[in-house]
Structures are given as C-alpha cells and as structure tokens.
Image (cartoon, rainbow over all chains, first blue to last red; front, side):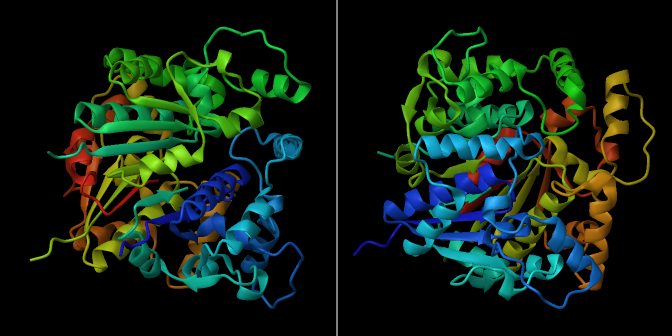
Length: 159
Length: 159
Length: 159
C-alpha cells in the first residue's frame, strides 16, 4: 500500500494572478492524485469571501478593512500591470477567448476535487473577517494545522 | 547508487531582483550537484524573452501585452524601490562594482549548467507569447510536467 | 532514534506582513519541535537591522540604500494596502487589540526558540549592509549554507 503524495499551498497573496497560479497548481495536483490543501492567510483570505455584502456587527477598523479589501476572488487585482483595474479586465478577456477557467471557476473545481480549503483563523481575527462572510464548505484552523500537513508534504509552496 | 537531489523553482514573478534570487539559488543548487528545473509562468516568462523585437502576427490584446511587458531579463524592474526605473540602475551599478553576475549572465550560466528552463505553455497562450520570442534551448510544458518534477523534489520554491 | 523535522524559510521580502507570516510559521514550527532556519536575503535583511542609526564609513550608493531602506522590522511597510504608511499603523493597532505579537516580538521569540537566523552575505555586500548594523546573535552565510539545510528540509518556503 502506498500513501498518497501531498501538496500544500499557503495562499498569502490577494492578487488575482497569484491566486490563479495557486489554484491551477492545486487542481493539477489533485488531478494527479495528490492530497491537496490550500491554507489561506492574510490577503489570500479575500479569495474565499462571498461576493454579496454580508451585514455583521463590526468595529470601526474591521469595517474599514472589510470595505477596502476585495469581496471575493472575482474582484481581486493583479500583482503586475494592474493599471487601476484595467489589467484584470484584459486578462479575463483573454482568458475567456482561450476558454481558460476564471478564478471563481477554479475555486469551484477545487471544491469538487475535494481540495481542503482552510481559512487561517488568526488572520481572520486580525482583519475582522467572520465565517458568515466566507464560502461554505471550507475549514478553519491555525498554523499548527498547516504544519501538520506540510511536514509530510511532497510539494509545499508559499504564494 | 544514490539518486541526485532535486531542486525545482516556479518563477512567477517578473521582478529583476526576484528572478536574480531564483537564478542564484538554481545555479547554486546545480553547482551542488542537484538536478534543477525552473518553470517560468506568468510574468516570469519575461525573463526568457529575447531582447530584440520579433515581428509576428498577433491580435490586438496580445500586441498590447507584448508592448507592455519587459522584453528580456535585462529590462525587468525591481519588486521594491523601483523608483521609476532608477532602482534597477542602482542595483546593476552596485553589482558591477562587486563583480556580481547580472541576470542575463546568470541565465546563461544556468543553460551551461544544464538547468532545465521550462516555459509554461498555458500562460504563453494567455499572454500571447510565441516560441520565436523566447530564448533558444528552453522547453515548453504545462503544470503536469512541473508536478512530475516537484513531487520528487527536495527543494521546491515558488518565487 | 528519529531525526528532527526541518523547516527552512528564505525571507526575501521586506514587507511587514510577509515577514510576520514568515516568523509566525517559523515560531510555530519550532514549537512543533522542528529545526528551523530563516535565511534573510535582499529586502528581507531589513528585518534584521537594528533600529538605531549606526555610523559607518560607506560609499555613496551604500549610504543611499541605507537611507532608503527601513531600519528594522518595526519600520517595514505592507505588501498590500500600505496607503503611504497608514496600513501598517492599522494592522499594528488591530494586533495590539487582539494581543497578537508584533514583528519585533516575533523575532525575539524566534531567537529564544533558537531558530537559526542567517543573513545572506552576498546581498549584504550588494546593499552595503555591515554586521554592525544587524541584530546580535545571527549568522552570516551564503546560498550554499541555505541549500545544505534545505535539501533535507521537510518544509521549505520562499517568502
């Protein structure tokens, strides 16, 4: 009996292109029969936000963070050539033309492939994000849970 | 018989300093007798562009990307303190003073050391880059090829 | 007799939030009984700078770099939503409210947990940084030392 290979990704970045890279690698690895975990921390949490506004009681700073950060993967900017939002439009246009999957689609596929999507509870606290604001079907954990997966990982990446 | 250790790097970034770090680690690992692969995706593809303009038939968006992205490793900007292009000049000046290798030299050395340089075909498609525009002697593949290398890698990095 | 698991991190970034992520993972791994190394290169060296000005003989460019780069971990900016320095203040305010550790505290804890903090001598040279400017109790080495650790690492990250 051989054990499954394992891929873990820390998604720290809130950039559309970097999140796309993370989810393309993750979906590839799952198709390759790896056990895959994506641990979303800091700005990477934005990829897991629902796109409708959720009304919650929050402090002033938490409200500001919630307003300033993109609500959901489709609203994230590019790491490069963002050009005040024109870049993501160009990329999305080209992606449609090439029948490439959009980031929201890649996240859906990841959930279908049973990739474990974890939201880092410590940075959720810091940024004032609550479970109601994030996608259904994800897990909540801290750095210890990440390390428990990663120490047996074959491919561990920080994106 | 012992197998060779393996290092794989995904070069996602189009920043001069990050690409330098990637190629310094890669060349170090090759000197250390690792089997080394650099998988260039998204903006990291720019490190592999030839520096002369190549005339090709392209669509409008593809032409725009080609114009906006730096043509070759020597024209890339810094991730930090770029100061509208002054940063790279300072760094290059200091590097010359210290006899450090420039990025184009590091890439040459990598090819001499038989480091496998792969261009990600999926993002080439997206950004409209064609094989004629990229350096000679590189390979073309997708994420599956990366994973096949990385799952046995000792050191796997995303830069 | 089982060997200790090993975590290595290359801290390339000079962003407060990325350095925080690096040190949180490193401290977590050390608490988890891993042997941990953080290799500071390029802008990541700024996390190791003492916060008082150190008077040293330097060339013009080296002086400029020294002036332009943040002196110590507490003065670093954010990778995202920096807003001309307002972002780090917000984050630090929220961190205090949540009793989260600041970056300087995380670095102190790392030293108490005997995490090996290495400064990359090649980039120290490039940026004109001298040992007198960096924290006490750290080590000085090059990419070969990093690779020697990383090739047996269970978790290797580039941040």
